[in-house]
Image (cartoon, rainbow, N blue to C red; front, side):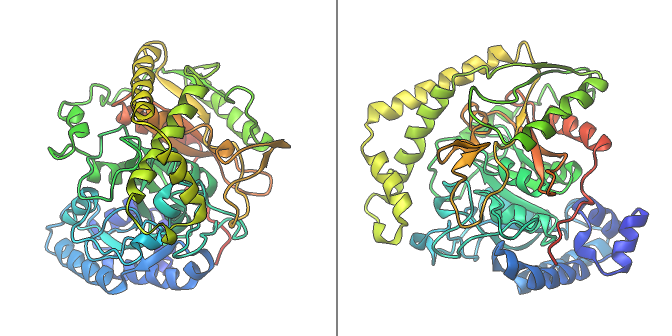
Length: 476
C-alpha cells in the first residue's frame, strides 16, 4: 500500500481503496475482507439513499462471504486475486437467490435459481457480492429510471443522471459503494455512464465473456457483460476473472485460441480520431476536452489521424431500429403489458409491426458492417471518439433535447457507442479533462475484434500520464 492508501486505511475510509489495493492488502494480512465490507456497507447506508444506485443489498450474505474469504487468506488458500473484494451486479444479470427485476414490474418478484455464468465465476473466485444496481426498464434506455425503483442520480451532481443503462453500477463505484461493478453494454450502456462519472468502463469483444443462465436475449449478440472500475488495473482484474469461453455460448468459441494481440509489446499504433459523426452535434466542452487526448498520444509515438466514420450512420440506425424493438416485442408477447411503462410499450408495438424479412435484413446489414471493419483495421489499430455527445442532464428526463443548441432525438447523446456493439468490437471509455463545472468527460477507444488485451494495455499507458482514480465526487 502507498502512503495515500495507508492513510485511507488508518482513517477507516476503506471504501476508498480500489480492488487491486485490497487484494494486495489481503495477501499481506494488512486488511481483512470483513472490515472492508463493514466500511462499504456503512458507506452504502449513508450515501445510497441520495443516489438510489444499489436497489437490493445483501448485507448478511456479503459479510458471511467476507468472513469465509478472511479464513482463506489467513490459511494461505485464496481462490484468486479478487477473493474478498466487494462487487455490485447490474439488475439485469442473474444472481442466485437475489431479486433480479430488470427494472420492470413484469420481473418485480423474479428471483433466479441460478447465477449467470459471470456471477458463478466470480463466486468461485471468492468475490463478495454486495447486491444489485439499478437499471432502466429492460435496459433499453440511456438514463436510469424505472417503475420499480425510480431514478438513480449522479454522485457528481445528484440533480443529474449518471446515464444508462448501467447508471446504478457507475453511481455505486463512483461514490465508493464497492470498488467494482459488473454490468452489460448493448449500445454503450457501460461506456457512456462511465464517462459521466469519471470511471473506466470496458465493453469486451462479443463472446469474450461467455454468457449462460441469464435473462432472455433482446439485442441479438450486441449486448455483452463487462467490468466497471476506478482504474484500468481493477478493470483488467475483473475482466480476467469473468472472461473465457463456455460450450453453452457458441459466440465464445472464437476465443478458444490464444489472442494473437495479447503480446506484451504495445508499439506505435495507428489511431483514427473521429471528433464527430457527420453533422451530429457534440457539446463544446466535450469536444474541447477529447481533442486534447490525441496530442498526448502523438507524444508517446502513436500516429493519430482525424477522419470520418468508416461506416454508414444510416446503416447503424436502421439496424438498431429493428433489433431492439423486435426483441422487446418478442419478449412481451403474451405478457401483461399493463405492467410495462407506456414508452416501452410503444417500442414493442413498433417492433411488432416489423416483418421477419426486416429482421433478416438487419442481421445481414450487421454481417456486412463486421466484414467492413476487418478491412478497416488493416489500415488502423484503434478508433478514438468521444464517449458521449452530451454532458449529464436532469435525472428524471430520458434524454437531453438539445446539444450545443441543436435539437436532438432520444439517441442524440448516444451516437458514438452503438457501432462497436453492432460490429462486436471491444471498446473502452476513459476519463479526460472534466468540464468547467467539474462534471466528468470521457473518450472512447475501439479495437479490432479480439484485441481486448491491446485495448487494455493502451488504456493503462494513458492512465500512467493522466491518473484519475483519486478524484472523488463531492457527495457525502
